[in-house]
Image (cartoon, rainbow, N blue to C red; front, side):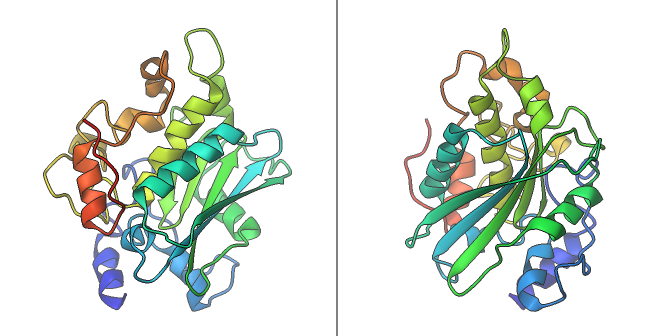
Length: 266
């Protein structure tokens, strides 16, 4: 674990999640959760926990805690899609569970990265214990300050956020996908960043990084293509029944880093 920490401290200023511009490195100091080892584990950069999430060497169970602003609850379909997606890609023999909890409107518009970190500090209740690894997600009621076209971000090693108002704005209407489909796509995409894709904690087996768009796949049909976390994905999803899948290169990367062995998408 110490070696892993040294590696990621070296790259902390270079790459954290989807791209440097809209995902600045978080402050890894004390943010109110206390300064103990268990909670500080969750203050590392995106990709730091890729192997812990994928493999079962240290953690055999995963708990995902989703906090959402009232009136922006994730759909039941999105939650089930996320659970199925994780079950396919992770080695967690003791299971994967997802909980959801509503909070009142924070009164922020738009949200900065620091705002999102502070909300996590105030509301995150699940932290690692024994063989259980935890992930935290936040669904906001407004847009992202750095880029209003962004629908989701992964901002720490076990933390992600979706921008619920932007997802609703881009779904459910004429020539738009359903909310569940768009929400599932963004959620699965951000969780995949926590798994270290693309080339950000999970090494590539073959070169497939779209470096122009940060840590994303160069296959435009893959879940990890850059548009999957922005409003640009809307037209692609129209007429689809399910979120875009991960393709061969991304799946090979996850398997090589301890992930599950489901069939590769052709």
